[in-house]
Image (cartoon, rainbow, N blue to C red; front, side):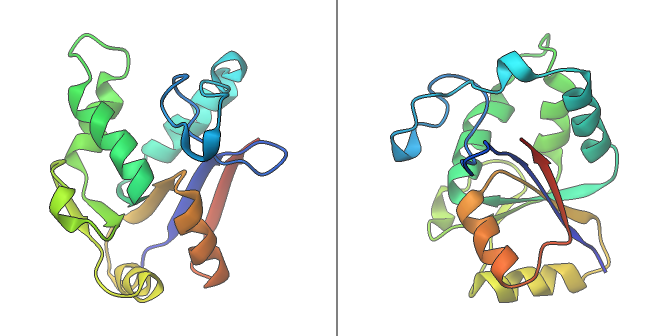
Length: 155
């Protein structure tokens, strides 16, 4: 049986927002994109390295999927992020979406039916853990259903 691990960058006031570039995630009129960059340090890097050191499948909400799918397949070969890109591009990706026809990122598939039931079925499989980044709306539903096994919050 596999577990569900959630990793999120979250502000003290509870905002889970994409930490990368200034225009990466402007949902909800968020104007502070790139907020994590000045605070990234060795501990942040170790946390990410630890998360990615074990086999995993990605479990993503539709907004996070859109952000990831627009970035990771296009990382240049000489980029510092190439190893992560190769990993993310190769692993299975399970996506909570009502737009299954738009999942063109390699190894992506839409979850079918009720979200909680779909995650219960995935967790019963004897496979790699499920790893979620961000995906705040989806994570809220999974927390309410008691399906999250581990939270890795970077505050």
